[in-house]
Length: 76
Image (tube, rainbow, N blue to C red; front, side, top):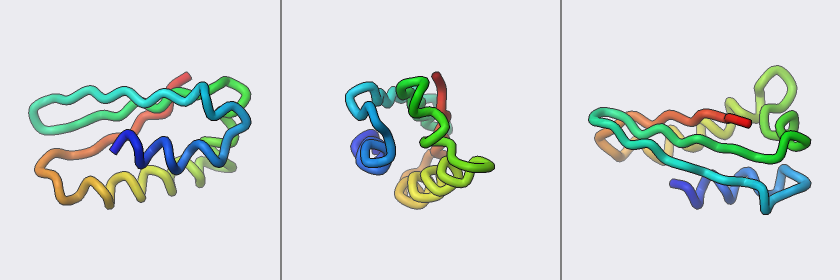
């Protein structure tokens, strides 16, 4: 799942080497935390959060086969 998130986000940003995806696994959920360069934050979020919403939709669809809920957080 980390590779999927990185594959989606890297073409969008100016500093692809600054992308880091960390995962926190709990009993019923897995939270992926996406961090990128501050200058790229607007590109990842998009106007009115449309890009972030699209990324979340793809990640949730890819993770629907797992028994745990998938969450994606975009952090600085």
